[in-house]
Length: 166
Image (cartoon, rainbow, N blue to C red; front, side, top):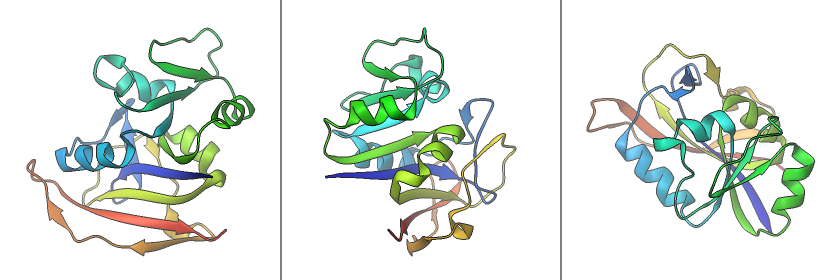
């Protein structure tokens, strides 16, 4: 059985990125994300993949890139060009499938997701991409609200978990 899960970091305004980059890098968040997704399937858009170090897929995961660019290829990742093709390719996988971003991928795959791990950042940044505000979406509920922590970088953050009624 598959479970689709959003994983993201978002500021107070649900901003997730600016100019195809994360708003801020929080080492504790990177460790959290790595712990959740290692050995799992992650689905992302082309721009998200290209924002990774060296533009390379993350190690020890099945990286799936959803892009409308028909000519796009990348070593170490599965490239698909639409939701139907994505679903066909992922039929072979069981367990957790993490939706990794960016904004258009989150919006397209939100209907398939039943959980979300959101690292909330207690700050506001200039952002040009946003996650839908799960607090205001029908069927989504905050089920675990983390404690505010201060990152090594000085940024205040917490780990929240949301669930969607099926």
